[in-house]
Image: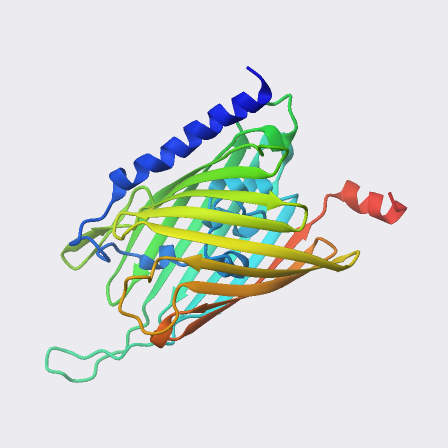
Length: 335
C-alpha cells in the first residue's frame, strides 16, 4: 500500500469517529441548558473566537489547552497567553496559561479560566436587602501531550495524544467544586502538510450540587480540521457536540500578510451555528477580528462577536512564544 492510500485509510477512520458523536451525546429537549458551569463553553483566545471557534486542529500557542490537549505539542518552545473579555450583562471572562514543549519527551501546559459575574443584589425571605453575592466560576487545568507513533519520522508526520485534569469551582450563594478531564488526538499533516484533523473530548466527568440539585458538567466533543492553502491562508472547520445542546458547526479563515520580514498581520473571520435558531434579533453567528505578530514571538489579537440585541463581545488576547536558545543564536549569527 503506497503512502497516499495509507493517508486515505487513516482519514476514513478519523472521519468515521465524528459520525458516532451525535448519537452518543445528543441532547433531548428537556436537557438543553441544564448542565452546570456553562462558562466552560466560552471561547478562550481572540484568534479562535474570530475564526468562529473552529479551532480544534489549529491551536499552536498556550491557548491550545482549552481547545485540544493534544495541540499543546504545537507550542514551538515556551508560550504564555492571556485574554480578557468584557462579556454580556456586565460579566467578564479571563484566561491565563503557560505551556512548554520539551521535544520528544512531550509537552505540558497549565491554565486558569475565570468568569466574573459582578455583584448581584440579594434579598432574604421577607424581601429585605441582604448581603450582595459575588458569583464566579473558575477552571484550573493541567495538561500533557506526547507523540504516540512514528518516532523515526518528522514530528509533523506523527500522531499526538493529550490529556488534561481539571479542577472546577463555582460559587453563586453556595459553592461547590468538582474534578474533570479532557482527552485529545491530533493527526499528522496529510497531503504534503496541508491538512490536519483534531479530535477532543472535554469535561468528560464531573458534576456539581447546589442546595439539593445535582447537575453534570457540559460535555463537549469536538472534531475539527485545518487546511493550509499556500503559506499565508488557512481554513478551519469544526463539528461540536454537546450533551445539553444541539450539534454546532463552525468554520473560519485566516489570511496572513507580511508587510515586513519580522512582522505579520492577520485578518480573520468565522461563522458558528450556535445561535442560529434562537430568538435573538440581529446578527449573532458571525465573528471577525485580526492580529499582529512581531518576530514570531509577540502576538496581539482582537475579535468581535455580536450577540444580536444582547450586545457584542470584544476579546483581547496576548501571547508570547519564546524561541529556543539555539534559534536565538542562529538569528544573531544571521543563519
